[in-house]
Length: 314
Ligand SMILES: O=c1[nH]c(=O)c2[nH]c(=O)[nH]c2[nH]1
Image: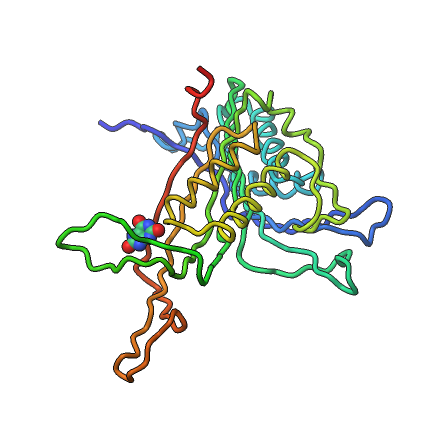
């Protein structure tokens, strides 16, 4: 005998690009290129165990819903759209008990023409993505996290690594000057008690498109947190003389928690993308941190989650 222990299903990799126009000047525009995944949970067991398709909301219907709702509703910021989709499936289908929504926003940035950001021309300046994951449950509970990933950075000096554990397997030389490079993957979990009900998120003030791009002013909690997290990450990466990836990511996460009161935890997952100093002794030449070999693999991988220290209140 076997039993269905867990199941979920839906549509992944639903892609669209939406153009948002300023109502006063429709040539001023913003674009959202997104990849969406919606997975449903609920009373679907017989579809797995008895080949009974009657409860199945086809994944094609899920796809149609994502695309049509993207047209009909405000989708900036992505957290707002995730909450809207999370509510939609719970309200429309009585046998759905939980909805898991994941949205990836692909980066398109307005660029300067004649000294100012152009109204509707964009540059793809890297693989960076803004992300949001939301779970909405019929019992009224919801969970939400936001983040950024694939923001690739490198600093050519201002990074050290020494004082680490030594044993008979250790060959790494300590250094006070190395290259540090990583693909930033940062996520932050929201304190839903501070956000209030999911309807608050589905109705949060939309991103103001005038002068935004991904460089300009944003005007809601979620945009502010994204901009803060991105700026803190990039500032600390540049300004700090890094002791290690571990120490730098902890400093970044702590600063974000300090600045964004509605965030509960911040997590980083950072590859340490190694650049090895090449040896020119065979030619009688030194190499004063000038020529490196970008090593594709292996890479270090360092993860941490930083939370508020509640003991601090005692
Ligand atoms: O910042 C670093 N952290 C490590 O854990 C580590 N390990 C290593 O070989 N190099 C580095 N660098």
